[in-house]
Length: 176
Figure 1 (cartoon, helix red, strand yellow):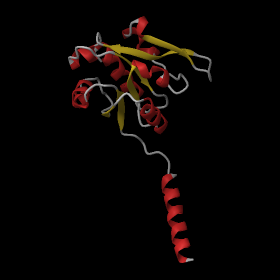
Figure 2 (cartoon, rainbow, N blue to C red):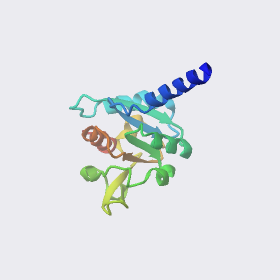
Figure 3 (cartoon, helix red, strand yellow):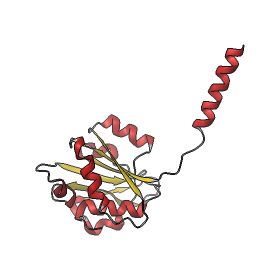
């Protein structure tokens, strides 16, 4: 009887502590799903440290191999604010319902690199993703000979939109 009571109490405490709600994020989380060497993590963070950050927000870059399963898990977990994924993962990441429109930065993105989608809940069409390739400031900084083609998106309902837009804009033209 005592064992059952102790086990029940522990389970209730675990349940309550797990349901305490999300904590307020203190940083912008950029998730990169690519074959880029993990040793580039610090170089990528250094590149984004130069981005205009009036709000004083810290940033974290996490790198993963280009796995559809891992990308799906991370999207469901909701930890990423900005995702930079290999083009092969585009069908997984491109969901206008969960993505934030990027219309405010399309001036720096060439038209053929803009990915327009229709949000099935609102019926609105917006640019929800942009192609980032070897011609962009980001990959020129990394000095990659053959970077391939990537897609960048920002997830909806995040606290740091203005900084996120600056980061995305910097991927293309390096000046934000």
